[in-house]
Length: 221
Image 1: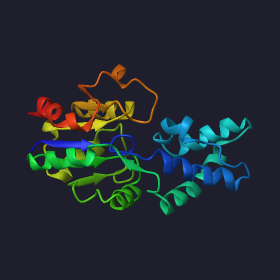
Image 2 (image 1 turned 90 degrees about the vertical axis):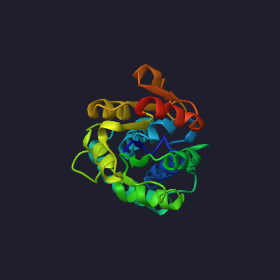
Image 3 (image 1 turned 30 degrees about the vertical axis):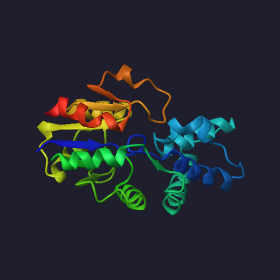
Image 4 (image 1 turned 180 degrees about the vertical axis):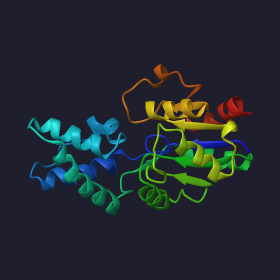
């Protein structure tokens, strides 16, 4: 069974606004106000909570320790869980593309480095969970991307064959994951990071979800 696995943050949806808002809860609690902005830090947001906290502490220009990040990490996650979908938007055409793939007989799933619980919560809040056959998060297994096992697990749980699967993502991590799994990758060009994903030499680039069907058919027909 042919399978298309999607990354979540920066691929299916722009989650940067809510992630940055959660990080700013931490900095406001420390008396600094909002340190991160969507104008400058969207790319950092999709790299995860610790990346945002590190960026924020560095911007303050004051010495900090790893323990400062460790202390704020659960505060950020709690804030994010309480307000997970206020600013998040699904990329244009994503819903329709996933539905078309299903109608064409593909299995579809999600493989993300967001925790499984938060990923499930977000997809439910966006009313976008039920269309996917599987969801594997950062803590579903004992390893996360770029280890290939979460990708393979997402394919298997969807009822697919890892030998006939493709990963749609937006970062070096996704490119490495697919390479480690021996699978082709499609990288979106509209993610929040200011990075030329073509330099990662994926098997294909995706400028708009309207084009996904044809690219997938070419790679895993």
